Image (cartoon, rainbow, N blue to C red; front, side, top):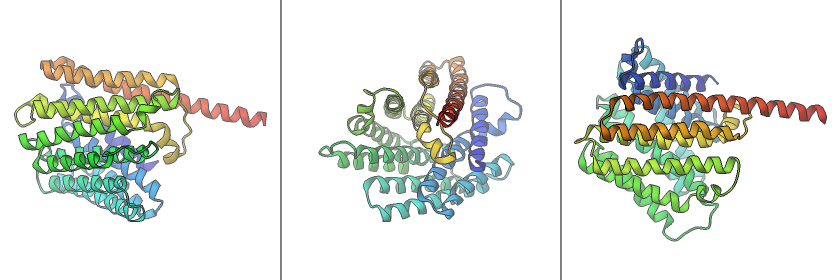
Length: 355
């Protein structure tokens, strides 16, 4: 719970920084605005991924990773120099990479190796940031970390389906192009093209091999989770097109569209879909599916659509409104989970009384 609290701090301050960047007036918000990206990418998602991996690994030292990323967040918010906070994030990534290496050695597979390279991508981005590279030049490494981590988990689940010819080869091709794009930098035309093409290929692979394509035909929780996955894949493709058609180095809104299509449309949608499975494992919180969860999911993707459309039209009010919609979606999702958790506990108590 304390580690999740550190992730929550990164979420709240990162969101405040994002709203300030959209033109909102928030007390002391300028300092958050400068750290908007790192707080969400490393402070929030990095901590959550480290925590999930530590639970899966089951070794005490693995919890140093989420603790270090949480400390990096606190250091940055306390006004410490950027190299201090970035170094803490880098150490967290190093521990995460070590844990991923242990898993890969014990279970050699493409998906475990992908998890390892995802952690190394996060490490590379944090080290470069600590050494003074500006955020736009390292953002490709951070995005690769998130995309590879999610893709690896979907690759593992895809083994439940009958293997198709060329599946791993196509995945590895997209994997290599993604890392090459991050290395060249998404702010360059070459790097943006490689990274964007990799996202498009990854989206095509996911639609062909992911079990979400089967689960969306089911009912209840499996269909909701599949809807989260499939909607996220759409935004992954949008980000790829934006990077190719509007290279960030030549187009301001191309950078904004690609970044938020991946982070909000793809990554947060994955979080919505996996929360029902992850929360019981992390904090033993019993939650259950409810149809009301579609409301925040709809709001979330509506916010991304508004952000993308406003970016193309250069409509400032629309971009600012998209930030409010994201906050509303997150709040509604938290409320829906809280309500379902209480109903689950009440149902369990009633069952125990009857027994």
